[in-house]
Amino acid sequence: MSLSAPEALLEKLAAEHRLTETEYRRLIEARTPELASAAAGKADRVRREIYGNGVFLRGLIEISSICKNDCYYCGLRRSNAACERYRLSPREILDCAAEGYGLGFRTFVLQGGEDGYYTDEVLCPLVAELKAAYPDCAVTLSLGERGAESFARLREAGADRYLLRHETADRAHYEKLHPPEMSFTHRMDCLRALRELGYQVGCGFMVGSPFQTPAELAKDLVFIGDFRPDMCGIGPFIPHHDTPFRDEAAGSVELTLYLLSLIRLIHPPVLLPATTALGTLDPKGREKGILAGANVVMPNLSPVAVRKKYELYDNKICTGEESAQCLGCLTGRLRSIGFEPAAGRGDVKLI
Ligand code: SAH
Ligand code: SF4
Image 1 (spheres, helix red, strand yellow):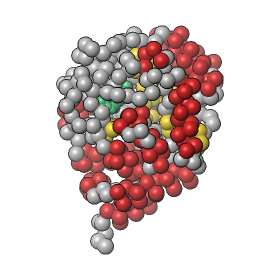
Image 2 (image 1 turned 30 degrees about the vertical axis):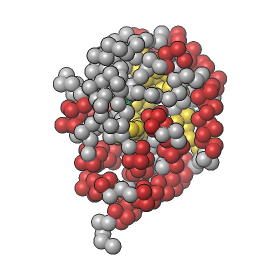
Image 3 (image 1 turned 60 degrees about the horizontal axis):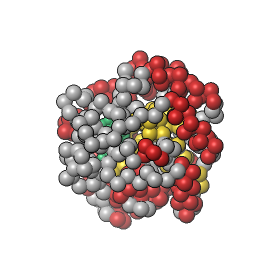
């Protein structure tokens, strides 16, 4: 077997946690069911060594479908006149958290479009109130790009974590997914600013986004190895019928699972969700994600009345269930494959 055979590259990745961009590309291009299953086996072992069979649950609160941005792939983009817009008030968000706390959640993720209503003046007191009411909980924000000053104020108010997918580590690819007024440099600067402010930071990308090839994915893997995020959200791209990418194909579930395994091997302690998009394309997608090396799931805590309106992509699952049903369903799914919901905030375990 030659040294650069994919099996040898996988061994090297598992031992050294790092490959070159060319090697990642080769590993991606060489994917077969056998190679993917070998990668999943190694990722599963590594994840169990650090986190056992516990999977962290995050209560996702979708706070607004209003967005000033126009990302070509997203159903919430401002040019989508058919999108039903809503925003939750701080009171409604606190009510969701109260329900979530009662159900056992110890992380709340506030996610939404870039909605100008949520100024620092609105968000900081809300974050502070959440932290005061639930001192044993982590507050994660996923509200897009903001200034470093704003990130600093929110951190001071008590925010623990921030999720901001980089979307692609290739500038030219970024520019094909976003309108000219959006900036790759600014997005990357935001990630670095968040890191410097002491947040646990999540990056990530869509698998199978338009124009993506193994070359771009290899760059994403290099970026993850260099940045070493605390969290990394990846899920298949799914077209939304009211966006410029309506006729594009959805991303591959198998490739997403394979990349989850590779990311676990690149950065063993990373908190890696099996995403809703994975569950949307494949009824067993989230279970498969866990078996491929993921260790986080994010049940929906949003009020049922708004869930269908937070339509990033078509056919999103979990839009009809009450929060308790979402939790019960996911817990059952985890147990069916030998995993357990883990107690506590579920911070990254740096090794
Ligand atoms: N506005 C914030 C957070 C909400 S969007 C932000 O953009 O960071 C959260 C994530 O949903 C995005 O980062 C993107 O990766 C994902 N997303 C958007 N449209 C999607 C689609 N059509 N298919 C799959 N994922 C999508
Ligand atoms: Fe807005 Fe985020 Fe959708 Fe882009 S991906 S349009 S920033 S909600």
